Structures are given as C-alpha cells and as structure tokens.
Image (cartoon, rainbow over all chains, first blue to last red; front, side):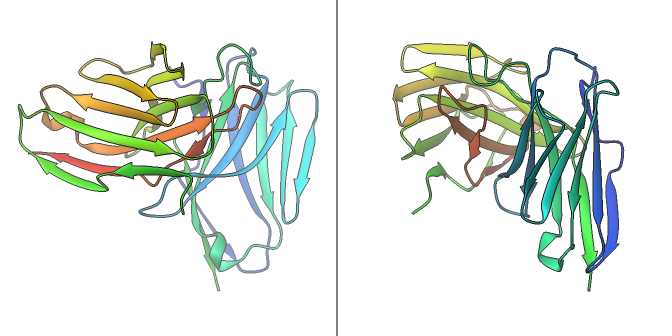
Amino acid sequence: DQQVKQNSPSLSVQEGRISILNCDYTNSMFDYFLWYKKYPAEGPTFLISISSIKDKNEDGRFTVFLNKSAKHLSLHIVPSQPGDSAVYFCAASPNYGGATNKLIFGTGTLLAVQP
Amino acid sequence: DADVTQTPRNRITKTGKRIMLECSQTKGHDRMYWYRQDPGLGLRLIYYSFDVKDINKGEISDGYSVSRQAQAKFSLSLESAIPNQTALYFCATSDFLSGTQYFGPGTRLTVL
C-alpha cells in the first residue's frame, strides 16, 4: 500500500519555465514533508521541507505547497535550469523529530529540463 | 570531506555469500538508517537506529542484519545474499530535533 504517491514518473520542461512536481499521500498522520533531489550515482540530497502547520515554504527558486485537505503537496521550481535535471523524491513523516523520525518515500519523478 | 560515507561504492557478489556494507558519519547525529532503492519503488527502510544501543526493524528487514558499532558507524549485513537483494543501498543520518535525513552516496550491490 503506497502511502506516498508520485504519479508522474517523468516530466520534461523548457529551461526558464516553471517545473511543477506533484505528490499525494494517504496517511492523515503525516505532519512533515520533504523533497529530495537525486543525481545518478549520488545519494539523495535534501532540497526543501514543510511542516503541516504551514501551507507554503519558499527557498530561492524552490517553493513547496501543502494542501492538507486534499492530502497533496507540490514542488515548484522557477525558473527551471538544466542543472535541475534529476529524480525528485517526495517524502513524509508522521512526526517532526520526536519518537519515530521515519520517512516514507514516493517512487520519484524524473525531471528533464531542456536547454 | 563528505559528511556521510559508504563503503564499498560498488560490489558484485555471488548467491550465498555474506556481505557487509559500512556507513560512517561525521555529522554528530544520533540517528542512522539503511534504505534500499529499487527501480520504480522509491526508497524503502531496512533498519534504523536512534542511538548505539537501539536497533529497529524497518519495512523490509528480512534477510538483513545491522550493527551500530559507535555513534558514527552503522553497518548492514546480508548473511546469505540472494539475487533479489540486488539494489542501491543508502545510509542516512538525522538528529533528534529534525525530521530531515542526510544521505550517503550509496552502494550498488549486485548479487549473481
């Protein structure tokens, strides 16, 4: 049972345009959400996170939006750059820090930014 | 220098062999994790440890064991490797206060 779903295996965007990556979750106990970026032959690197008390968090070109009622979050990259081409994983945790600190990952979306 | 290191980076072995993957971290974090990544399945948690005396099973622990030798070291063993354990393996760390985990570069394991 996939608790965190990334329904788009891949996405292609032109350089300079907006990239929107989507993630849905089923467990209403999740209260902390993260996005990781992964290049080939490297480990996932932390990109941006959001706690359930917020609906938006911004860091430079990256913004994460959280819609708790729809159990949906999205990552916006504006403007997209060729170096953003990577696999993006959405992850969720039932606790921020605290007792469990476990992450449940989605299956990833491969973003290709075309020059 | 990398904060989270994994050795070896690549390993090819045969069915039935015992394999150990090692992870070291210089981030000073208490919590360490082992994941595997398979195509189309994302990352799945194998084992995790919140301190030296604490070991917990994750989602897919069967066929694996771990050892937390020190705060900075967490090793994963495959007692008798089988072909469906062919995957990318990642170690990660986090501190008590943050939900953010930091990953090593991964080990590509192939079991023939």
